[in-house]
Image (tube, rainbow, N blue to C red; front, top):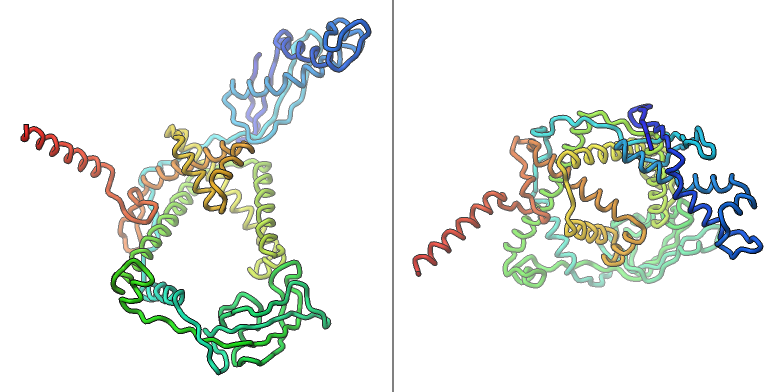
Length: 468
């Protein structure tokens, strides 16, 4: 088989393939065998009809068609391999010449992975925000912890912001209760929001036993946005009593003996989280810098395919939240045109990033260990709230393991690029990323660790020698 490739554009190639007729013999034999199982010829057992008899019965044409249908996919794949082409979509194949006992010729046009020339990646400079933690943020976290251990006490007064009320509520339209819009005995904190527009305003100033009606609209379910009349009745008003912030509370709410230790731990935890957020921002900034320095042509068909997948994913997420796309866009203050434009831009950037990171991985000869793949699958399962074993089984059964491998490879490629970059904060301080651990702490440099281990080993040997 001979093949040649013609570059039609940076993302599309045309293969021209010539196949001698004798190379089609395995497919011809398979075609005769298959058709022999499908026809009945007097004097011959099913499946044992000779090729010459099949030719007389149904003609040579169906045999050749069957052979071509069997051979083309294999020949196409072989041509891709021979010319080192990475396809991105299904090809458009056209048989340009084929007659019985003559050479088969066909062409295949296909979207291909573009050739990318990577810029100099070592020493890329990016700036990220400082890791700034305020006392107010620490106080807020401590306050949240106190609220978890708070008690609720009945009070004989009107409800105010921060109070809890026990309420009955129903939404009416044209005098009828809207299905699914009626609750009884529900506990609700005044001022929390997120339930019905106007509810907090209505509850403020209401005492136990009082009722009120107000106008609103539904915010969830199939009837999102429906204008309704809401009747609310307060059964009880409760005041939240927070525990004292002292050593006794620290011992109750945590493993610490003193409140100072508890607050110090909260501060350290927030600092670790902010460090992880800073690292994520740094990775995004470095990748964005790389994409600004390289031109990545992307086939429109690949973009369209990914866009459709992302649209479907958005629709599924909104449906599970009981929202329509229209209501979501309205809440975000975004038009459909703006949404589509933003989605297309993010899709193109994501595909370009994949191409670039794949090229980095190729240049660095990055591989994936089984342990790395297993850990990645476990994390993905946790993120989606699924059982890791069931998630892994689904990945295998639906042939998604190559996608998982690609994700690990790209993650390792990005880590290499980021580690080689010069990342500083707004104050000009170096941002440590190479030795940042998953929990947000900074580990010892690998070289230092190895040096310490070597020192310990040397000391141990010296001691053994002295003892001897």
